[in-house]
Length: 213
Image (cartoon, rainbow, N blue to C red; front, side, top):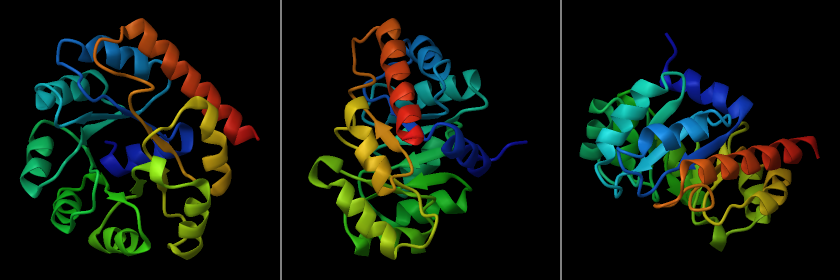
C-alpha cells in the first residue's frame, strides 16, 4: 500500500506540480479532477477557504487513489486533523507554523509549509516539513532559490508558489526549484473542465521543456 510520502516521492520524480484548486466546489471536483489527473498531475490541493473543501477532498481522494490529495491554507493543528479525517494526505500552508507541521508529521502526512527566509526554512525542516513552499514567489526570485539551496540540507525540495506560469518556469527550474504550486493560471472558479485540461497540458509541456533544457 502506497503511503503519502511514497506518493509524494513518485510525483516529485514524474511531475512535481501541485494543482491549487482554490474555489473548487464538490460538484466540480470530479470533472476538474479528471482534467488535471489525466494530464499527468498527481498532487492536488484544495485550499480550505474553498466551498465545502473537506467534501471535495474526500471525493477526489476516492476518485484518484494514486494521487496525493490534500488541503491548502491549513492554519491550525485542528485543521490538519480535519483534513486527515476527510482522507487528505497533503498539508500545504501559506506560512510556517510549527504546530501545523508537527501535527502533519505525527499523522504521517506530507507537509509543505510556506517560507520566505532561511530562518523559516530551517525551522520548518526541524519541525518535520516534507519540503518547502516558497511563497509568495512574486516577492522572490530564482536567485533566492539558488541562495537557499546553497545552505539547506541537500535534497530539500523548494517549490515556488505564486505567479507561476508556463513561460516563467524555466528560470526557476534552472536555479534549482524542485517543482511548483500552480493556482489561478491552472484553475479558478467558473473555468470549464475543458479549459482546465488545456492549461494543465500547457504546464506539463512547459515542465518537460524546462527539464530538457
